[in-house]
Image (cartoon, rainbow, N blue to C red):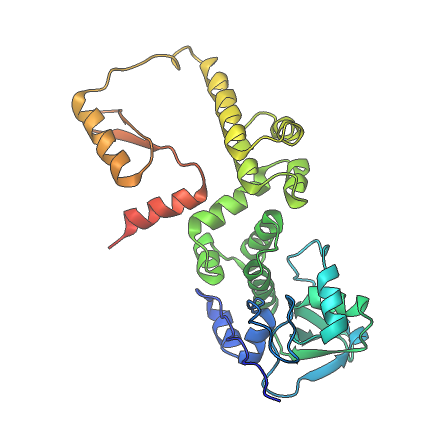
Length: 320
């Protein structure tokens, strides 16, 4: 009986130098690639969505499930919601291999680099052996591969993503530009994700468990009491725009009590207003242009709602 065609392995774009060789290895790439859309049902082919889609081109190496242990560089802090994957593994087995590296201080023991969620599902499905790909991988590449795997599956929380970025910066001297290139993200995305770590721990936890979105969290940055705003947002079911509006009013009120000049208005010339209009038409954003200092020194302020809009502005401003 003919087998259905295997979906192509999706390799992340913007790889870091250390990952280029690893992701050029098809077996390694298959362990971190996201599940492909399920094709129309064929004879003897799973018709329901299966998260472990990739079978190796050759018979895979297998290891007893007890010889694998969770990875110390794993960016995920939660492995909830794997019931569907467990049922899939029970019915079809573990089709996508797990990427592991040997542990130097423990014989016949391997640390998971990519696929810990699959390993946990295999345990619940009571499998004895699982397919693996074994490679010798350093800590930095292990953390980067873990981030790539989870980000491609879009199930990593913004806080876990930010913590992964922070660890790469603190432990491996990565810059925000390095992270953007390695993860295939924009630099504004990396910067805005890292800013979430400036929130109080209680608010970070609310984002991590899904009570608040990353957009709501960013709107609370700079407030005197972000935790109070977070509690209000959850209780009143406020949208991102609601939080932005309330946070803006609170910040404006705070500035209004300092010095008495906040309410002062200056009349703009027709030329200045015309320039603002041209900028707004070009970028699709509210613009505020103010003359300051000596001569023609000016301050341009753009109202940007989220980092997707910021990405668009950066793209337009840097277009060659």
